[in-house]
Length: 602
Figure: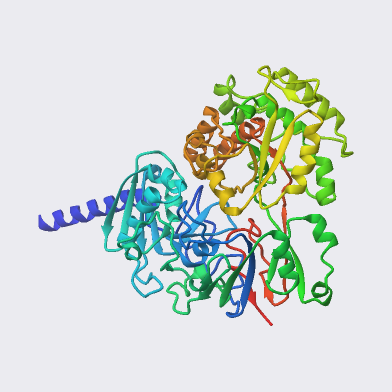
């Protein structure tokens, strides 16, 4: 009888094992996670696919940066912090492979586990994970970091945290976050949150700017700095994660230095003079015509072209629709017609740069020409009464003959302005029914894009529109931008192959009034909010692409931005001793590339 019971118990346990295996297969602790499907790299991967895994250590690189800094906390609205703090000093639980749309692999965390429908995520820290002072990274540090960033940091951290119902320690090195909202991206978003050392902030207000040197767990530490002048990061030879497969071939340079200058022209001259090591050239024309200085001719400076397969994003003059003058879409449409892209592109770039025809150009996520079809149409139809013309039937940017006169488009713009209630008076000035003149200001950062703004202002004057170009310093520019205190300004929205929660900050309706978001245009579209929700809850790549293409249609037909050009290739001029791998990530010259996988070789 005892033997029979024992056998029965073994059979029951065996059955339960098979049963639970099916469940665990879906949500077992694992080495990585992908937004859709499985990570491309196997559990025993040796290195990321776009590194030289045997790259030598040593050397230095010097970047030229515009503006300055007066803070070493990059996670709050107050002050200006060096970009290098967040990418060299701090780390996250997971690290990103930039050769996949969106896949993460363990960094501070040795494993990640998710529940059914990703309604919770659990991370287990590596026992060897340490801050640069030798103290261990703890679950307490993780929970404190995420909570503090959401409550006192930049608004971009609050959105995801609002979807966290609870955060609790589940083991000596494990922490579980349970969600109150369906959002399949949340486990990945939390995996990329920076982990700060809680003890660093004892007795201090996290939200207040300071120049106190932070303690991070990353491969570099702050070495020397002088506010608004320079900052140097030194590779930490005792970095806890130097032997991880994820880090093999990365973080090769001993020193990374950022020098700060007043404007881009000075940065370029510093590069020509040998003060800095590398320069990203945004102008195709300048790249072709002005890189003939002695260091290039001698071979001391190398010109490298780095192609990419990421979305174009959007760069251009953005309308602040919170301003009454830009609240009418017909006015925005007229002003887009008045922007002679073909002529301006010819003057600035010799016509060499393509225009961003939508926010996700250059990728499979971008809208397809013509009317919406299939799943995209099905997603948009419930909102068809609130969508602007072109969202469903198709919208394309106006084109000119490039002759500088732009007569056809200006005539169309004038007609549209009349339809919107604007008339040119005897004085040649455009007025509305209340007699108010059509006047607005274009805010520029320290003269940047001034040539483009002047050419545009000339076109607008032909319509009777008066434009003031206002150049402000970096501090004032940032303050006014965060407060939406502008009529029109230049901005860049960088977009990835896996757009997600950040889209709420870019286009979400809360950003109309909530300060510090990237919804600079003041966009308030229920259809856009719905498409973002679809993107965040899609369980297949196909559904996700459809939702993104639908969002793209809403954005471009909304006439919120006057699109400029984009670069599907990065132009890097650099010292010949600075090398990069032959295999390039799909994102190209992006996060995780320069200086992360570069090395110095004499």
